[in-house]
Structures are given as C-alpha cells and as structure tokens.
Length: 410
Image 1 (cartoon, rainbow, N blue to C red):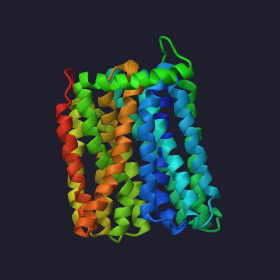
Image 2 (image 1 turned 90 degrees about the vertical axis):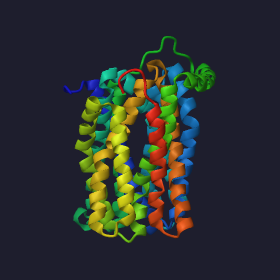
Image 3 (image 1 turned 90 degrees about the horizontal axis):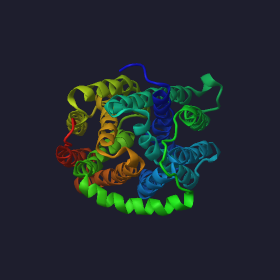
C-alpha cells in the first residue's frame, strides 16, 4: 500500500490513542490492581465488564442512527472519548480498598472506550475507498498495537521498578500509569478531530429531529437487514466468534493466574502480544487483499481453536509466551478484517447505523463469553475446561460467516 494520506493516518491514529486503555487498563494493570490494591474480586470485575458492555450494546444502534441523520459522528466520538478520559484519570484519586469507586470508574471508562468505537469505525467509509478498507482497517489495528504497546511497556517498567522513576512504590506507579493513559488517549485523538472531516449529509437535522429520525432509522435497519442477508449472516457469525476473541483478550490474565502463573509472566506475555501484533496486523491486511477478508477471518478462527486446545494442556510459563505470540499473529487481523469486511457489506450512507449494530453485537458478546467460562468451570470443577468452551463460539461463528458471502469479492 502507498503511503497513507493525512486523513487516513489521522483516522488510524485514534487506534494508537485508545488502545492505551485496552492494554494498560482493561487487559493489563486494572485486573491485577483491582484485587491487590482496591480489594475487588474477579466476580466484581466480571460484573463491571458485563454492565459496561450492556450499556454500550443498548445505546450503540440508536446513537449510530442519530449520528447518521444529524451529521454528528465526530461529536459523539469525542463525547464518549471525554467520558473515558475523565474516568481513567479518576483512578488516581481512588484510595486503598475503595473497590466500589474503582468499579464505577471502570464501567464509565469502558463505556467511553467502547462507545467511541461505534463512530470511529463508521468514519472508515469516509476516509478510504472500498478497495482500501482491508489495508486501512489493518493500519488502524497495527498502530493500536504499537501505540498501546509502547505506553504499556513504559507503564510496566514504572510499575516493576518504581524507585527508578523516583516513586514511593507500585501503588503510586500504577496510579500514574492510569493518568498516562488518559493523557495519551487525549493527545493522540487530536489528529482525528482536526483532519478527519465529518461526512457530509444531504440534509443534516437538528439534534431533536435527529433523535426522532434515529428511532425511525433503527426500526428500518431491522427491516433492511432482512434484505441484506450477507450482512445479517455476518453479524450473527461475528456475534459468536468475536465473543471468543474478546473473551480471550479480557480473561487471559485471569486464566493465567488461575493456573498458577505469576504477575510478571502475565505482563510480559501481554507485551509480547502488543509488539508482535503490530507487524502482524499489517501483514494480515495484505493477506486480506490477496485471499479475501472472509478467508482471512476463517484462518484466524482456526488458529484460535488451536490456541484454546493448547491452553487446556498448558502448565508452564514458556507455553504462555508462545500462545501470546500465536494470538498476536492473528488477533489484530481477525478484528481488522471483520471491520473491513462488514464495511463492504453495508451502504456507505448508513455506516453509523449499521456499525452501531456491529458494535452492539460485539459488546453484547463479551457478556456471554466470560459467563460461558464460569459455567464450564462450575460443571467440570476445572478452569481448564472453561477455555475449551470457547471453541463452541468459534465454530458457530464460522458457520454463519460461511453463509455471509456477497456477490462481490469477499
């Protein structure tokens, strides 16, 4: 791919910006600090993830439809971003043992993070041509891995050796790490704000009129999906397989701790995922151009099945590092090609509305995955069977994806 335009690069940099929250907060330090410092439990953390996901799932389709009719994709994007920035910065003020405050801020931060993605994804169709979707989407994810990984590496160094940075201990280091996420997220969101234009609307509406039109559009979308059968089959399949992908991302630390791995091993594995994921996401975008986005997704899902099986038997730290590397090779690719493939299936002038459904299903799925793992562990009395349960979601998702084949090139 040729050098990206300023608009494309500015759009992709938002992935660089918000991935700091995904890595340092959601996947990395918060799950450890929540229990060790604030006194929360894994059950509390699961409920926080579910609550945030449910709120976004309920709001995303309506907000997407409103943004389409009111020409307000960027306005909503930065409103959710502001919520995430404030909530993440607020962790600095939470005292020892105050898990309810940490719980609330985490929920608000996750809502801000996930909610902003509805409008970020919808802007893709305005900055790139259809034939560029795979590569541009992959560029965003690759920058997300690199940006999130760089800040996470700095934060991990600060947490593991706080005295080197003149800090009193790990607690102060972790709190400063959360502040760094807020600053990073805000700073690198500016290029999108400045240089990515709001897609033009033929007749933009006032906010009040857009709300009413949004409800009408939402109802019409359900009917429209019945006619866009490839998009409908894709959304159902995506709902299942992205559940497994997101669950692995969010539950990796918890699963690793359950089978006896140490915090340092878990953090190191997350760093491996970030830096391997950067070039891998770019390479996967090129793969999508060569073999088709749909086939690229199938390949990634097959790798995830293998990861789940290996995780069942894993009992040594080096195996966790290997699995982290393997996941990094396909994780960004599956996410990026899913986003670009769906963009090929929906009308450009209704991208916000349809990406609202896309994100709604993705965020709803993250409610089901952890619960499936909990049920599997409860039935078998072994956490190892919980990871195997995710194979069911991958297989069902792949079956629906098989039917989501448009007339054009996949």
